[in-house]
Image (cartoon, rainbow, N blue to C red):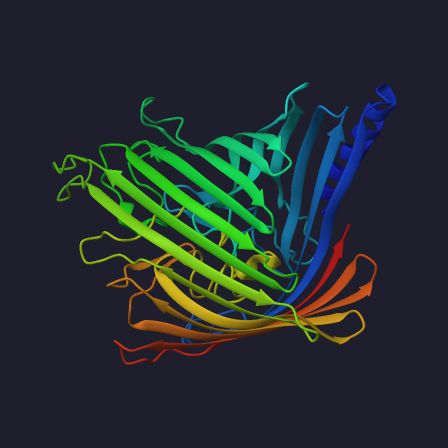
Amino acid sequence: MRKISILLVAAMLAFGLVSQAGAAVKFNASGHWRVLFNFNHDTDFNDENTEDTFTGSNRIRILFSAEANEFVKGSWEFQAGQWVWGSGQNSPSYNITTNTYTAGGGAPLDTASENFKTRLAWLTVKIPNTPLTVNSGIQQLNLPGAVAGNPIFANRVAGVSAVAKVTDDVSLTAFWARPYYNTAGNANHNSVDFFGLIAGIKVASVSISPYYVYGNAGNDSFGGGTFPAAQPWAGGNLDEDTDFHIVGLALTANPTPELAVKLDAIYGAAKNDSSGSINAAAPGTRFRDFDTKGFFLALGVDYKLGFGTPGLVAWYSSGMDDDGDGVIPSFNSGGNGFAPTRLGTAGGNNLWTGYNAITGTGVGTYGIGLQVKDIKTADKLSHVFRAFYIKGTNDEKYGEWGDYKGLDEDLSFFELNFDSVYQLVDNLQVKLDLGYIIPHDSGDDDDLDDGFNARLWLSFDF
């Protein structure tokens, strides 16, 4: 903690000195302090596994920006924590070979934590006399998602994005992103790159966002020809690059002030023409080719009433068949993206420790649910209620890697959420989230156990 404090003070002093040297530069800060008390029971649906049942933790996240004028602005967001109280965890680490992230920064007795990291760092330049704004650096890049976020790509990533406001109702965004780069790899096959184009169009009460993304993953991008295990259709043993194509559309319509209709439609493909020859580096295996295509559809309807906003959410994603085909490629990590529920899907990341107990992306599943948002029971107190049924669409359960759960057609879940928010004072909220999941496996002995989670947390936002 002492190291964090020194860095904060240094940053503030640096900002102060620069302000004196150039009075035209304007500095701003926004962010949050959060404290979480978490009770977790059997969210892996197996009561025989050792599992922490109660933890306390906290986190700080602050975004600084330095704006010289209307044309130039630099932004930096850092995060300190999550500190798990009493834990002796080390600093956070990421293993690119196994695609695993180890959280760090415990808070045992009389110990200084080293958990400090940069989340975002980018430069914004508005080109004079044009409608073009260019962002360069580590930035948040989300493909459009109208219903509950985008299941394919919604991540922090290094790259360049250019936004052009063509008219008041039309905008275009083009981007290049580089999520992986292997400095020790073959120079012609050592990186993963994405190129995309997003349009934003508004016509009366309808907003439409079509988009296209092309990606290429060099077969030596990860030091051994292995794409992250979160992509089960692209395991390892590749001697050719992989090409990706994503085409999607997000639509929101408000026919009346009370009614909102939302739609997401996405098609994606991944292809690799590996030779099929024997892999000398892994005796007994062959380089494998694949050609998978899949789709994702989601629908949401909300209607505002006096007591709250009831709504319907439904989605269907194609699953992997026996030949390894049929699943849409997804590049989300850390539980970002599609988040219709709080415990079973990426919606758990509304704090920082999403469980994604059922699926981190929604790919390879279908679901339907009812919800009521904005339930007011007292002054400054509101609630959200959700009831969802979720089922796998894959022919077989192909494993669990990171946030990607390969659910087969035998696995289904019923999830209930009841989340409450109380505005204690300005900028400070007290939140209580309750989640319960009932799993069912029709192809097994169905010895899965129900999962439960409760979170009480404080959030100071500024």
